[in-house]
Amino acid sequence: MSSLGRLSTTCFDRGCFPKPQVERRSSSVRIFPIRCSVASAPPQSLQVSDSKAHQSEKYRIGVLGASGYTGSEIIRLLANHPYFEITLMTADRKAGQPIGSVFPHLVTKDLPDLVAVKDAEFGDVDAVFCCLPHGTTQEIIKGLPNSLKVVDLSADFRLRDLGEYEEWYGQPHRAPDLQKEAVYGLTEIYRKEIQAARLVANPGCYPTSIQLPLVPLIKARLIEVKNIIIDSKSGVSGAGRGAKEANLYTEIAEGIHSYGITRHRHMPEIEQGLTDASGERVTVSFTPHLMPMSRGMQSTIYVEMAPGVSTEDLYQHLKNFYEKEEFVVLLKNKEVPHTRHVRGSNYCLLNVFPDRIPGRAIIVSVIDNLVKGASGQALQNLNLMMGIPENTGLLNLPLFP
Ligand SMILES: NC(=O)C1=CN([C@@H]2O[C@H](COP(=O)(O)OP(=O)(O)OC[C@H]3O[C@@H](n4cnc5c(N)ncnc54)[C@H](OP(=O)(O)O)[C@@H]3O)[C@@H](O)[C@H]2O)C=CC1
Ligand SMILES: CC(=O)N[C@@H](CCC(=O)OP(=O)(O)O)C(=O)O
Image 1 (tube, rainbow, N blue to C red):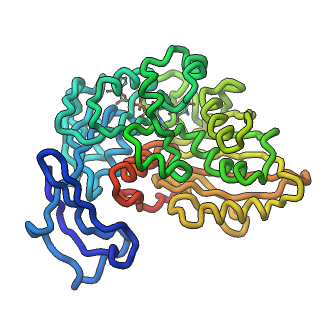
Image 2 (cartoon, rainbow, N blue to C red):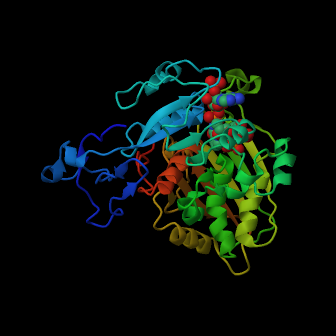
Image 3 (cartoon, protein in one colour):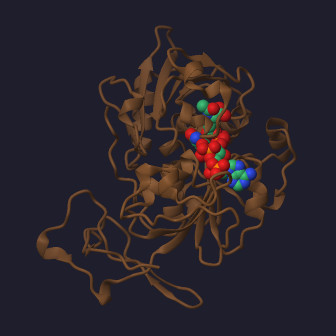
């Protein structure tokens, strides 16, 4: 537990955030600090320095799989988080190493240089981010205390149909009861359910980049659900940090290739979300590609518009739908979204273009696969589950170039 450093009075009074909450637990009282997380600092006269009256506890967070790429992104995002403090990190092969030696870029005074452990104790943890390979995750989450809130970044709890899970992941589901409880964590679409959830299945990176534009358009019946064609491209970090021959520099650099043609395990996840939006079974043509870049993801989506609908209608609908959203942005004036424009940030940038073929449109969606496609969205979800402002810790702008 630690007290917060410098606190500042806020924009609560200006209505930006909900009032600070006081939560009573069995043995302690947690008082969320009054703090403004907008980029500009409040005037000097409004700042208050540390005092007992303003000290507060933080939620204790475990990062399972801290030595992997998504784990390291969670740690980076939590470095300056005012309400969360990492108290537990786990690893497998790298267990026993301080996180600063696994990821030297994470050596900062704002982070505890914890040693990643193999066998974790959860008594002192309020919530965990589970950044483990799918398959191992179900067993591990099954063994966690029920009191913990969990955001699982793996694919283990995303598919409601257990038969479908077995078909696409090659093994029977080992925690069917937890699957029933899990809420799918596409934040902008399922916010209300996420707020009340204990276990959130964070979406895959491709499904995030694809569902964010398509779900609102399908719900509004602006596009036909037949003939949706999706061409997606990912940076290599999407494949995780574990060594694999196919991901060597020599295999990836100076070329691109498609993979999982007609059979990528994200297909049923994408189709589940689009089917929910439509009310009728939706199938898509989806082909992912591996790009010679470390992070970033683009989905180019080809759709047929409903009779009488124009690309301007699609654009305006998405613009209105995401008007109040912080992290999904419609670009103006036919600007083309670029993966560089979201690098390191939690943004999804979208734009809509008319196809040369009448009646068809092309949608371009970009995210950082490790942030909005994984750890950033996971943090957005845990913020909601803990009742704190959803954008906390996520306001950093993209890195460019
Ligand atoms: N990378 C991405 O862009 C995205 C990934 N995801 C999902 O998030 C999860 C994590 O991905 P990512 O961070 O890329 O993966 P990494 O391979 O980079 O990291 C995996 C982590 O899990 C640990 N681990 C591996 N096997 C076991 C095991 N049997 N028991 C306990 N710990 C284990 C590893 O420890 P050690 O290194 O010490 O061996 C490491 O800390 C995966 O399920 C992935 O599919 C979701 C969205 C996007
Ligand atoms: C480039 C690359 O290999 N990407 C991964 C997807 C990463 C991701 O989001 O997958 P999860 O469903 O495991 O969370 C893949 O194609 O399997």
